[in-house]
Amino acid sequence: MVMVDVGGKPHPAIVVRIVPGEQRMVVLCGTGTKRYEFAGIDVQSISAAGKALRLSKDTFFYATNLRSVRLGHAKGTEGYCPPSLFLQVRHLVEGALTVLSAAEQEKDLSEDARPRPAPTAGQP
Image (spheres, rainbow, N blue to C red):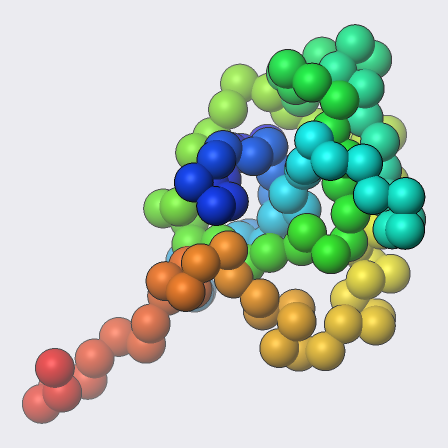
């Protein structure tokens, strides 16, 4: 469980995959906005999962909120994702990855979220 800034506001996010060679992670960001047109996972703040995640309000996780984030752009939290919720998240994410294009799978939280290639000798 991490917090990431989306539009200047911190959002809870569940780490789905870490890509150490690229210094980034794939996260599923939560939102407080209920979207009836999207399939997703609803986590009530008063539920066991909501308490484990340390949510302050009901939070919704949608496949459209799957993002690539630099490791340094995420802040760890004391909350954790319970195994039963993580299985739901993995199912949602795996379904999304089968239909999202490569560009959509690498969609960043911000223009600078994905690491740039390291410069080689003689290049700025």
